[in-house]
Length: 386
Image (tube, rainbow, N blue to C red):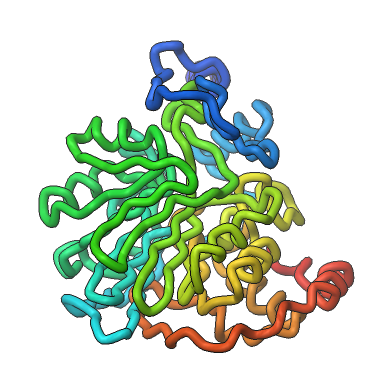
């Protein structure tokens, strides 16, 4: 028995070593060239980069630790539920007459219906976010059953990470609806590999769907990779969808960076509704943000830069990607908004699958009280929220 345990331990150790090596010295053949074009302010001729600084702040040692935790678990992390009850929505076929209806499907997947257009962001209906059926497993079923989705006209794909670009779902959508799929440079190559055509644009470029409805690909602060060595071969982005009764902004997946890009998006016209990430921000205890992910504090700054529209916090509560507790992001957001003197109802967490109406454009509320928010943070108001 003792000999068997030694052999099992040795085998386990070798498995860990191989996984760690694979994460740091991936084979050359896993690299891909997704885009070729002239150098620019965010492309050096080979790889894309953030003009406002690095977004990937995960060292090889931390990356190996995160890989270990994904494979073997981490008992020090706050507990998450195995499953979250979801009552799926059955959206209408269309929404017209100046109304806007939104349903959070889960994670970064949002259905927006307005002006006769059905828009879907970073659609993921797969059970796991990762290659070959491995990766974080969803704890909440999609907020709309795929069969209950209305016909989709427009799909936005922010970048190629597995929790945002689900090729199996994109293939199902294309086979069923033939939607326009808009993404940023290089990602059309990845999506095209699944037999699905996509329109790729650079930051600042747009795609016109019909008169009065267009998509502009806008800046964000993130990074890209499907395999390890193909890092930053494709571009990441946010989006502004121009609509007759007020624009829709989708942040995708992002860190704060220089914090100027939300105002750049708002300059394209008044934003009626925004989907802004608030989760997967904590990889070490006490962390409030990462270089590539904003937490609630950064999300408030993004929301402010957009002109403080009606907003939905996303990128939490579906896939466990980091160290914060399941409900920590929305609880922290609600408390931070109150510290900043804001009405939490304008940027409030919603239940997955609960459709809601977005009010018409109105007066822009006053800017947040950042001094009050900083006082709350310094006093440790949120320290107990792990």
